[in-house]
Image 1 (cartoon, rainbow, N blue to C red):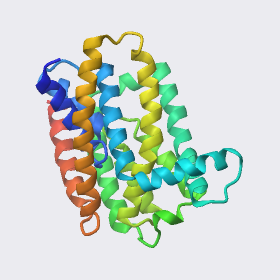
Image 2: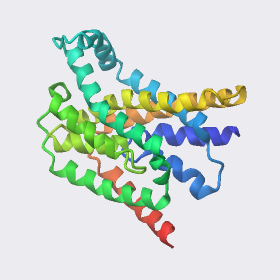
Image 3: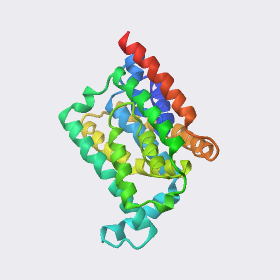
Image 4: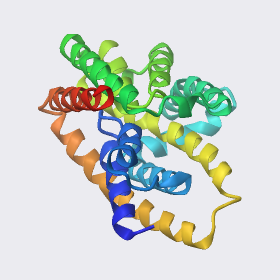
Length: 267
């Protein structure tokens, strides 16, 4: 695959994975609107690995705490902050893994990969994010995450399996409605992305491992590096901006893009 194509795919994935604008929707739109060759599952797995490493690095203190608490959680001892975080992340991940596996096995996920679907989800869930962000109280912090809230945000995450919804956008929406401050809702959403991306990466990786050749592996490694740096940049900028700026700029982008895509799809 040409280097520019790899760079373009990695930049789209890296910059949009953690912003509430849908990375999967943008990746589907790239070949649909430009006529470029679809990047294929090898590159999809690679750029997901790159973004996964970026979010782990950025939130390393939280990740380390959850990893240290995981053995205690598995033994049923929820007596440390790390064990509690690990349990909440597990609870939040189970729904999307189950539903995602069903959609993958039935082929329903491929049926939703259309420009019209992405246009509607961009528009609708952008407006839902705006509504939640404006009306949501801000009294809760990420340290107050509960099992109930983790389960509810996990159910919101299932909706992101519809292309164009945005995994980060819909989980932030859920977090804001539950009363978490903007920065804290985004932090929980990013932490939820780690096991979710790992699960989807393992599923896709298992499908392509038998067919990947040396050239594909090389292309994947290049794409992963590009995606890593793009995702790290996007995360750093967004988390800093959320200390003083709302999600409205992302909503405006989603609404404009959604309208443009619907005009394109139905014209």
